[in-house]
Length: 390
Image (cartoon, rainbow, N blue to C red; front, side):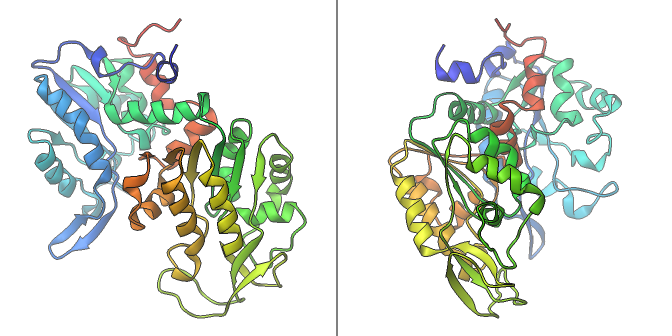
């Protein structure tokens, strides 16, 4: 069995839907895109996820299907909210894929999140087939992601298919050496995927706020940096595990009490080698660490990056993310960016075109890498038209 076949084993694809002429197809898309205030109301700030859905929509239209998309947008608290209406997105989808309709925000109905069977029944009424192309929502057991495959012939769309193929390939047979770069703020959010990657990657590069709990586990004093004392033992176990763990040897820190973030300028900034002084907050990897990380990345056969190296929204603490991003973009190996803030950083640095694959799912990417499956994928494998699994 090929690597592609192994990753997609048992998953129904678009070709498994059969004849589509005159049939109504419900597509669960991921149109949860950033929005901004424009001169005449809310506008789409980043339409990458919408554009990524177009190949699936066009494939269905070309085969004579009537296509209706459904998606969530944000987290509505109590019914309809104008700022989270799908109207601007529906207008853009109509431009990119004429003839495709878009339902209103699924989460305006609380039964979506609770996976209420009555909502599933209402959602699929009148449809002949279902397609899930929302990788970024496939780690949620919501009505629109796990409900329809129990009743309708179903398939993974082209985007979902590609996500599983790429990320599944990382778990099955990555080109060596396999270097995983994991950053972000909270170590608790990434421990699961770190534990999974520690058995598959050759080297794990750790940066961001989560690095300070690892440094503390090695006996380093981290000043006032983000620290989760309850996770020290788990971090130490990962350090002692199978993969080589590469941690920052120097960090860029801000003096106690000063503010940081986009536009902030107050406070003294220092680069520390070794222990931090009391109250100083580490907010980026230092130049020595950035260079060491880049050297390892350059020699990788496969690179996976999920999570920035520091508070890159603040220009004083963006160098580490910039250097790592450039290294990922120029590596001789295969480069995969696992969605979320790292994908945003790559876009802002103008490096997206140099990356082999950028995932559309942040949390979904992490969960897939941790468990090798997602609730929505499992639901598709049990669809009435799914290939029989040997």
